[in-house]
Each structure stands twice: as C-alpha cells, then as structure tokens.
Length: 181
Image 1: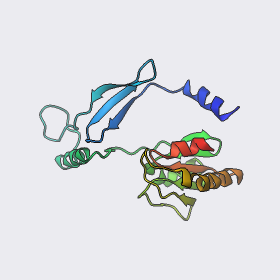
Image 2: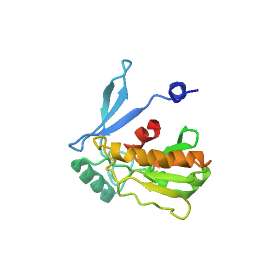
Image 3: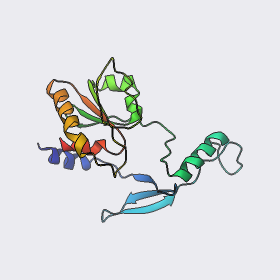
C-alpha cells in the first residue's frame, strides 16, 4: 500500500476537531472545517478564569493569567498543557512535540532510537539514549526548510533501515519533513 493510500485510509478514522489559532495581534480564534473544506471561525477564546473571580470556576492563578495575557499581546502561542502525543506516521517514523522530546518514557515506549530535533531552542534531552539530528531552523510556517531537508531525510532513512525508529520533533515544520520521505 502506498503512503498516499495509507494517509487516505487513516483520514477516515479522524474525528472532527476545532483548532485554536493565534493571530499576529495576539488574539485567539477557534476554527473548524466546514463541509466545503474551508476553515470557519467558531468562537473567540477568552482568558482563563482567574483564582478569586466570582464569575466562574477558578482555573489559573493571577500570576499565570498575567503571563498568558502578556504573551497573547505579543502574538505568541500560549500552551498551558503538555502535548504528549507521539503519532506513528509510517513504519519506524513518529511525529511528536517538544513535550514528547522531554519524556524518556514515551520515547522508550515507542522504541525510538533516533530523533530529528527541528525545534529551535529545544535542547537534545537524552543524548546518552538516542542519536540526534539537530536542524537549525525557525519553527514558523514561513521558514524555508529546503536546505535542511536532505540531511534530515538521510538521517531518518538510515534510522529506519537500521531497524530503528525515528521521531521528528517540532510544532510546524516536521509534519512536512515526515511526509517528504
């Protein structure tokens, strides 16, 4: 079965989801895919309820809420909870986040032997346990990753051919890296 057929079959098992997107001005919107395939705004996100507010259930401290608000004004994506999903995208190839990169138990449970670190500013946590390939690129959809692709793909191919498993870790760029090979 080709990679295209595998992806097409896997998409039938996906559940509908909403996506939170942070705009350049720091505001957040929630979108979902419409029947014609375009994304439609569902809701604007509000700041988490602060401890001591009378209007809702307390969820975060005032100090944390201030940090979140400051980051939103600057346009950063605010991630309040870890993303510990490690997805198998092909035999021997996994995709995960920086949170997965910092969790030895998850990496070992998936028999990972090699890691492509394509997340700028995220250190290689377990150099004694895994072989790393560090890509020095910004984790931004506008980043040109062409010059970094071939060395990373060679590293991934070597890992899979040597009966290992490789995990590509990032937020934006690595899905395209995993699908390229």
